[in-house]
Image 1 (cartoon, rainbow over the protein chains, first blue to last red):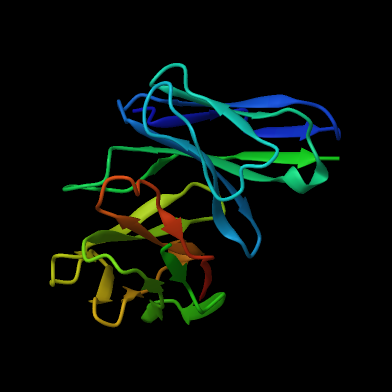
Image 2 (spheres, each protein chain N blue to C red):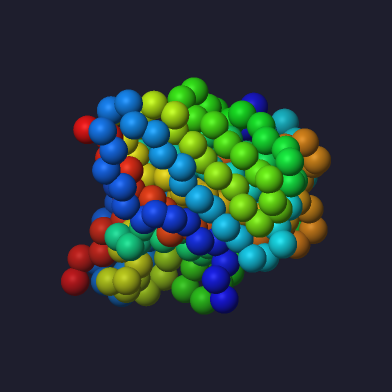
Length: 115
Length: 116
């Protein structure tokens, strides 16, 4: 009953450091997403993928890269972290929209602080 | 592009009372899905209720129900018999039913406080 697993749950980075957030799902979902959540801003889409080997930009993609080499995994990379990237990051996955759409299954989030 | 608006940044309710959270959305599409998600202090996002736009009947899940007004593009959430565990951020979200529009669009959220 794992669903969507995000690692790590917490991380502190220094400005300029790099890191990768890992998202893994075991529900055979085609679609995967990375969002960031900031106070008063709701959830904003960073990047998403509609299948293995595909990625697309969301609303706030600058400063981030992603890869989906395997269907079950979606990686979010920060090449050179900036304080503006301090946020809570959520991964989510879903089936394609359509009959029986139950929206997303979310991971538990990663709190990232860039100092 | 679709937008979702939650006009109440914060709401409060007394335990055992009823509260309604507002959500409006803007779309030119006729077929879509609407969702309410709950985010308690644990940070986990939990699906509360969903509505299919082609269904006129309002969705209900135990103490949670929606008032879906398609023409007015309104999707409010009613919580009856409020409990302390209902205290959370609530997000309204929209998703197109058409291919090529795979992502959920979220409102900015309403923080609900439940007073004992």
